[in-house]
Length: 177
Image 1 (tube, rainbow, N blue to C red):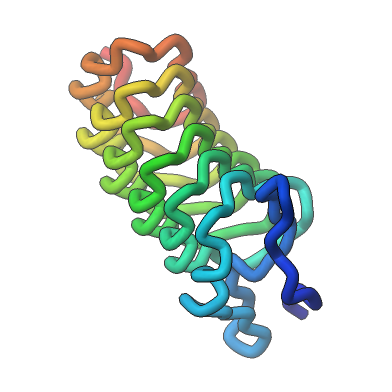
Image 2 (tube, rainbow, N blue to C red; image 1 turned 120 degrees about the vertical axis):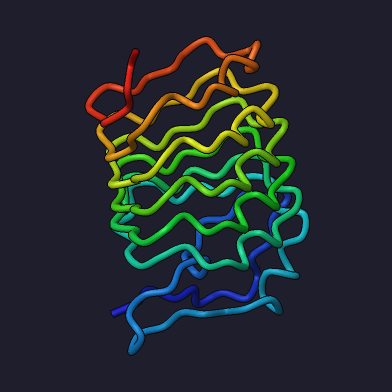
């Protein structure tokens, strides 16, 4: 059964939210709140939902949270593709989706996250290539995607990431020539 917030008062002085209606569950237990609920969260800056046994997938509407700076929803049972609307979160500094069950490619919209400092995708089932658009993450310092099914060459545009300090890609299919 899906978990739903029982509270309508989702805004607080610290702009921290710990509810789960950003995710869908099974078709039977859907928790789709849509744009109307997300519009109420227009000032949300930090969303911390890690280690909560949340299942389902990330709703596309999460891309409406334009002021979001920290999104830490890893260590859950989340699955499916990482929604392309993640690329709409242009204020995002930390994106932590590790230790879940995401699969599919890293969305090319990731390149829109110019202020992103840390991208943690480790221990998922992400596959495909690291998108060339990653060079758009101009402030990226940490990129961790170990224990995934990423493949191909390291995106040549990663050489443009002048702030990059940590690149952690073991246990992937990335060609390290």
